[in-house]
Amino acid sequence: MAFISELIGRPVTDVDGTRIGVLKDLIARSYKEFSHPVVDAIIVHGEMGDQAIPYSDLAALLSAAIPLKRPMAEIAAYEFREDDIRLVEDVLDKQILDTDGARVVRVNDIELVRVNGNVIVSNVDIGVLGILRRLGLEKMGRWIAQRLKLDLTAGTISWQFVEPLTHDQSMRLKVPAEKLAELHPSDIAEIISDLNRAEHSDLLHKLDIKQLADTLEEVEPDFQANLIEHFTDEKVADVLEEMSPDEAADLLSELPPERSNDLLKLMDKEEAEEVQELLRYEEDTAGGLMTTEYVSVSPNMTAAQAIDHLRKVGEDAELVYYVYVTDNQEHLIGVFSLSDLIVAKPETPITDFMHKRVVSVDLGTKQDEIAQIIAKYNLIAVPVVDAENKMHGIVTSDDALDKILPTAWKKRLPHFFGARP
Image (tube, rainbow, N blue to C red; front, side, top):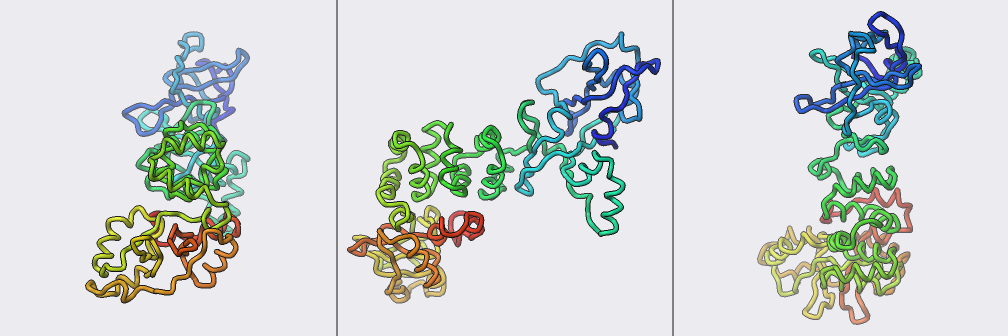
């Protein structure tokens, strides 16, 4: 085993021991029979500039000096390929995405291992030891860590999770669709915030429409607009349809009016109308903050019928903790929670256990007042009604606190019983 930081700068000698230069880089290639890339050549810097020498012409690589098997003059030129990985130029000190820790980290060193006559790339070192090793302080660091009972061994990632991109971009952990599906949208959003435009664009294009919509909902609207700037209108329209109406409205309000109108035309008519309704209201009012995705039931239902109804429509709702009771004209007449519903006997009419005195806000109620009402009554959401008590939507607690709490705090709030885990 060796680390690339220990090999760089070592002398490379001809078959007769004559020094021809120093090791500058290693070239690795992926092969079907290996799960890790195999070192295929080295780049030597000498008086003649940089020269690539095939690994097969080396007598040894993981040694104090790197001798050739035969005279340099007899060695055929190495044939470069597009998928060559230059470990120093393309990997060392470059960023990778750690999907397990949902963070962006930097490669501090690269571990090489000899296997059956080949040298393979086994791990990348992202920890403190990689830095100390390159500074020549590894032994001292280990000694200090031992005295202070610190663990410096953590911080390596197997190469099988690393995928090289083009040479002018950073390295990043392989993020296939099935792996992304395991990440919470807020984790993906946090990763994206650490990347530059080219990098986060590449990652976003790997998400399906639902994942993309959920991820965008975890970032601020102005950043959302930046992220989808180069997406086609057709794709953005699909994403908007997957977002909750209030989030879609917030995003559209950040876009140029012409593009916003074009996107609304591409959306499903019913969903576009819901979003357009929200765009009519000022951003800091209940009308501008509310979502039209909520669950309502008829007052003539029993508990069992309400449960059946929830099974059918609950998946599309923003919040399935409160169930609102409305008449045929959508007038709000009651509310009950899931706990109320669960403890009720199946045959019990919902009018027997619903709460008839419902705390609500008007369409024009300001955000500060909504937040105070939610806090005063310990609510997860509050219904929004007009002057005739007709229900238009709900404002959830996290939306009410938006712009009041710092973003970093707001993102720590749970999405209580919502469709998003």
